[in-house]
Image (cartoon, rainbow, N blue to C red; front, side, top):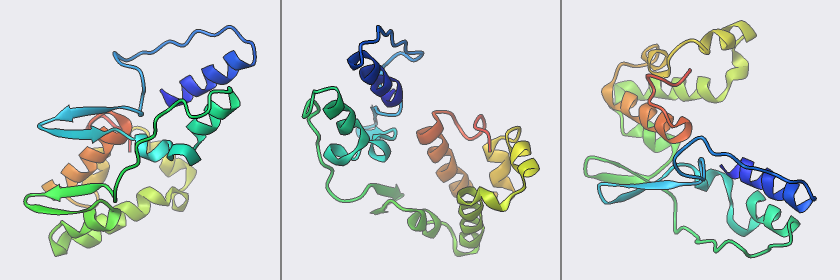
Length: 166
């Protein structure tokens, strides 16, 4: 992935002999995408690179290979489509596509997920052994909410919510 490749480039530039191994069929880790039903699904590159201003370009400069990567700027924000409705991709829009009676539940889910410091160390340790989809059930059983969380788990952890740890 980007981390292993970056560290490998820095170590090689410093004179170390390196060997980078990849466990998956393709290189890139989270810095990849795939095509599905006519759509390109970005698995996370947008979160890490930041183009010419980001850490990957900084590594390229450090190893004396500036401007090696042709950065392609994206126009606008990511999109979320539910049925015929297309909107900018954000936590707010993920909440707003749900029925009004479920929006508070999803909001509480996102709050707890993004503020784990509110939980004790023991509670956090116990979540290691709880599947993400089971944890989501504590907040909502709405199928669309589960689909949203499953898509996030697939994108960020590369496994479905039934296999990701809460």
